[in-house]
View 1 (cartoon, one colour):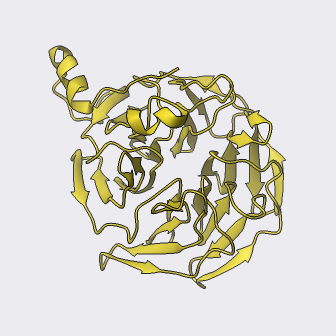
View 2: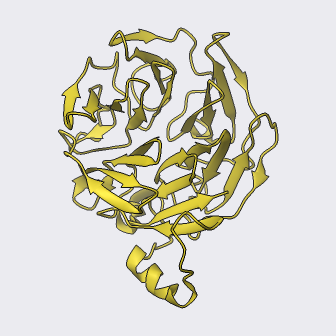
View 3: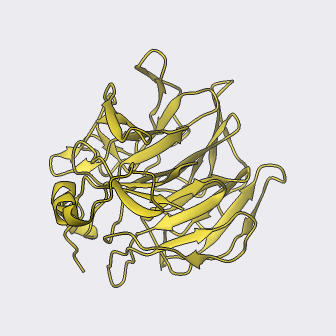
Length: 318
């Protein structure tokens, strides 16, 4: 099923008759923020306070190098120095040292070779710095920050079940030593309650609903509550300890979804929340104390994804 996403401008015109004159984050449920500069899918986002950093993604002309910061309070985008090379399907996180880190992905035109390069954006000096490469290339993976460590989980590349950990204070990589129990690509990864949570994704046998949880304190993986449905390329994030999963796709048949599920802190049961305004896959996403953001993405799966890419920014406020 192919769903063409309308542009944010058209959506705003359609909603003009029912606009309420309140700030973008003032009403509960979904609202639309200022659109990202260009339509794209398979980019990444990471939050620091009320600022959400958004980078890269795939567009008709290929992977983009755009990098920008979105201010949730002011509903304003601020362009930042572009990444050294355009990329998509990469990992991104803001670490405890205050840097914005980008790992791997498909860089430039190299869609058959997951990249191993690793970059840090210095917010203070507004410059990108290349750090030590990952131990192996990774794309279509996830990366999250817990304390001073960055965890690179899942994806495509050599020995893809291995989990890499980067110590941001010592600037060194190590192998976690506890492989991901079910290797997968196009997964969701969040940090919640000091643990790494892996949500859905695509395994060798198809799209899965499985959730796995890694506890750094015990050094072990365990099973979490499965998603209500199998999903890959979903938007994921945490808002005040609650995990949000929205959109995504199935593989057989290939469909794009707008469902939205939440898992409260300490709960073992997902509940259904208000759905996205339109089906979406491959969106950049991030959670903050003010809400859950779904940025860009595509309405169509597979070969249609690049032709149905969107610039829409949807914000869910609990």
